[in-house]
Image (cartoon, rainbow, N blue to C red; front, top):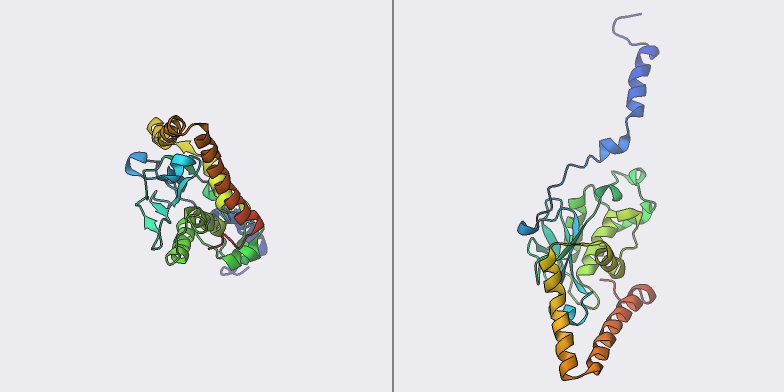
Length: 243
């Protein structure tokens, strides 16, 4: 055998080692995230929530939502202008939910999709990293007109999650984004609970004292109307809340 050539037997161990190496680990190395730091408003890869003035006083389950980059900076859509970066509107973060980047789909090509919606995901817009997806959604929303009832902060967060195909799903919308943070989110501290619910309790008590029980019925009706609007617009008239 010539010295400059390798036999198939010599190449076999090299091939076996390469073929056994998990491709996904090579393609998508996820660097460690920093710690959640509420004092400095850093929430890496989190959904975050805060109460809305007036609206949350009457319906405390409704609030303002943002989504955070890998360095913890908060992005939120709160007006008809570029998306806020590290300047969460209305109030400090009260609740947060850290999302798992391993639940996202970061395909390098069509064959590299880990979600089942590869063609739909490719058409919608894919990303190579978490931050890449969020930046793409920012560019899409930077000239959108904000509207509390049709195109709001929940729409922006849902757009980001769909671009990430988070949890293998591309069906994220206002309702399931709100439910995710409402039922799985953690409170920052006890003071966050107090400032989120105390205005609602005060308004309810003053209303009952001044108006009576009809005020409580009015608050309940307001909440039901809001819920009905978002449920109908999301699941019955899907084009109504698209932005």
